[in-house]
Length: 457
Image (cartoon, rainbow, N blue to C red; front, side, top):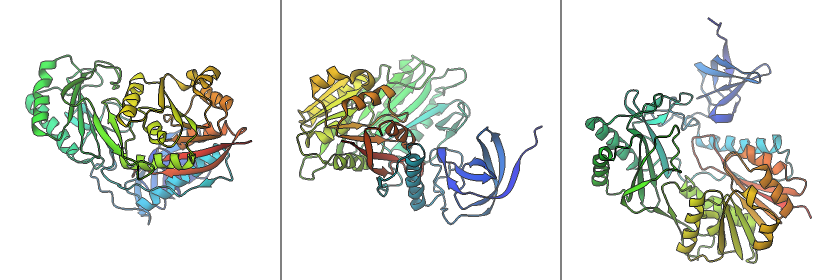
């Protein structure tokens, strides 16, 4: 048996990647979960990588003054809220520091203004979407345990989504057990009940999607009837059969069992005198997971744009049109580009729903659509807004932006590391002016970031 490395009374120095904290032994960086900077702990090394080690705390000698008591009984096993034992003010500190570190270390940026992070209005029950997984190991319904693809933690109470989210999950599990419905076996890729998705809005709409692994429609009907009868708050009830080896359902045929085909979310506009914006969200639509914070995020985009009303704006990775429609009242025209065809259809419908007539949405990847012919047909933009996925922008999309050279680039990102990498490629032509971090996901390491770059003339 390999000799275990144990280091005693090691001080935790910083908060790092994936919600873990950082210690050092000599020049060696060690990542440790569920501890807080300022803790003094004994560490057992569980993985040794070339550039870093991973450790596990086995004894705490001194508790950090930055600690607080976690409020969830699943803390320490569930990987969803890894900073729950850290005081919220310190969570904000380390999120701001993360953005600053990435911009300095990866992007080599200096001389810009880093604005104070926008704190979350709610630190509990802030999510509008949760996805639960069924597992036949102990017949549980909950979240995957980090690092164990075949293990699911049975959830009693989750503090991420407003009720009746918890009640729905518990009722589904109880009915399934009493009815003898089989839970999914991920190793053998078999079983009837696979996933449960719950979406909600601040307006009170609620969507439930039952994902089943077998094409046995008769077996799902009693469960759907039970849900519809027990929870009148559910305004949209779907089911879908997924026999694939992954959990994605965007490419599957979702069946509306009862209610409306969408849920509806409202958003305050940039100018208070304007009417609220309305967005219809389908079962596979992307919408910012924290609805309250999304308003602050889009308000920041509008503020950074400082629009005069005569601008043509390109909105890359435009999704269901939220940013484009939010900005449309204050500019000449917004051109949205989105690779998911169903999202483009949703965006067009949402524009019509809001009486917006100066938006155009194109279906396709930004790196393929953006070219000289496209800009000739749609006018050259004075501002480009881009909100890519966590992986960041395709290099060809960045190259296309550098050929268009708009006066302003507003980059919205949920990953400041890839954002810094992408923006660094633009520094021959652009200057980073300011950044606004925003906390969209309390008790996690994740931070949203809006950055403004201006062209060097």
